[in-house]
Figure 1 (cartoon, rainbow, N blue to C red):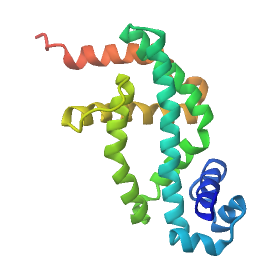
Figure 2: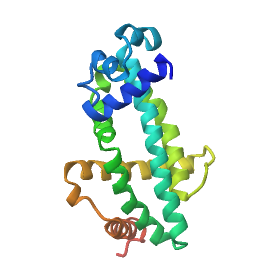
Figure 3: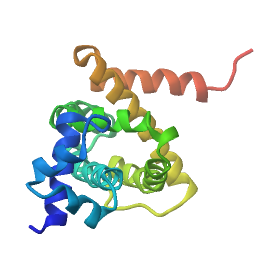
Figure 4: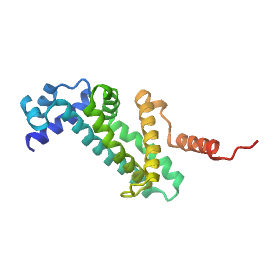
Length: 196
């Protein structure tokens, strides 16, 4: 690998181990075995490098999510069983990528003071929503439509909420069956015609 790739790899490792706010340029240079000056040369700033590393690491995590969904799709043809299996499988993704989940939430708290980070996260939103819509339907991709973006927003909200609950207390995070039960209850309450 070249210095640029080494820096990206080192920055991702620092995100997992130290988080977004506590990672220094020196930490990245040490983890990368590259000089501090190389950060400025290749990325312009530590923040630009961390932002790029965050986006790339989230993409890597997306591959883990895709494996969980694919396994659920292959295990059952029943949509409810697949739904439950996906949410159960995501617990493994949280274990594998715990540091990144923490770093993402930490980074989100910085957006008010880091316009470049806010822009990078905003740009990733639409792509992430379409990716989640495809992922949870077991499709390689979906068209860029309002319907698919809405579907992706729904899954994004569930996923973020699940991550928060799991990070705070893994033993209290909902099971796949509890997710399904909650979905049924909410759907019944929202979609059922009012009886008066």
